[in-house]
Figure 1 (cartoon, protein in one colour):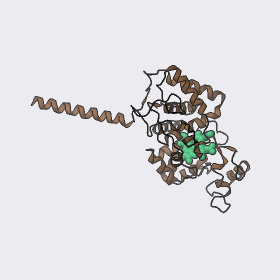
Figure 2 (figure 1 turned 90 degrees about the vertical axis):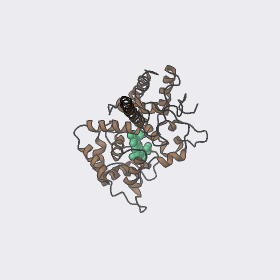
Figure 3 (figure 1 turned 135 degrees about the vertical axis):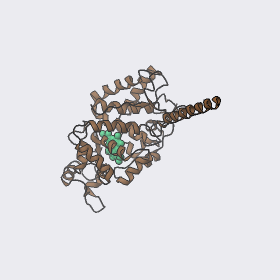
Length: 328
Ligand code: HEM
């Protein structure tokens, strides 16, 4: 009798342990402070490089935040955006990635890490830590970044084209695209708030100004006064001009993006589309109406952590690249 009680108690404990292990596994093997023992200085090393960079070149904050997003949406957050291809067939060669900038800053952080702890910190984690640090360097949101990712070895131009959502995407495509990566409608809205900083080429939205349905018309969902202003900046077929996405505060990480969207001044169709669904519209409105930026900041951190978990390689999978642009 006593033996069977002991056995069933052991069984219960084992089940509980498996449950807990399973939960840990559900985080994809990532954790805050993954390098605490193996490279205690890791996060400080990246932070130093990023804060120095942003203090002299604040305009690099936006593309470096976007780089982590573009890494995560193609094959997961495993650093494949950083790989070079001798035949220009890597992710970074795909049109949506041609406007990414700041690869040299990732290389700088990685070289510093390799000096301190050779072969320990992955390029995928450098991207995740960098995304966190660029936002905090411009006094934006702050979150505890999970680490423990390893690097992938495949980078393919077609996969980038297939997985990165176009600025013309409607709400159905956007929600489905995020759901495919395990992200919610709320994550979609909150992360779109990343457009509070940075600039866009005219090409990403000029159809809304000049040829919306192929009849030389404008997008009726875009504020006509804003269209007039944008037309002054972007002439038809302008490939080069950059436009602030959050005019007047494009260097400041704040919740004004949501106010813009509610005023029908979101720059892309994908921004405007957030008003076309009751769930996403409610999130946009609540952030626009919020007093202060703290609820957006908190949500942004949570959604960035969610995004950082997409398709990660952990444990023995993948590798720790020595140089982020080439496999070992
Ligand atoms: C929801 C789907 C999204 C679409 C369709 C989209 C599309 C775009 C496009 C077309 C640009 C302009 C690129 C250029 O012409 O230079 C851009 C810029 C940017 N995006 Fe997104 N984006 C999306 C989501 C996100 C997310 C999730 C983040 C980060 C959390 C993000 C952060 C940024 C930033 C910071 C810029 C400015 C980059 C710079 O100044 O160089 N975007 N996005």
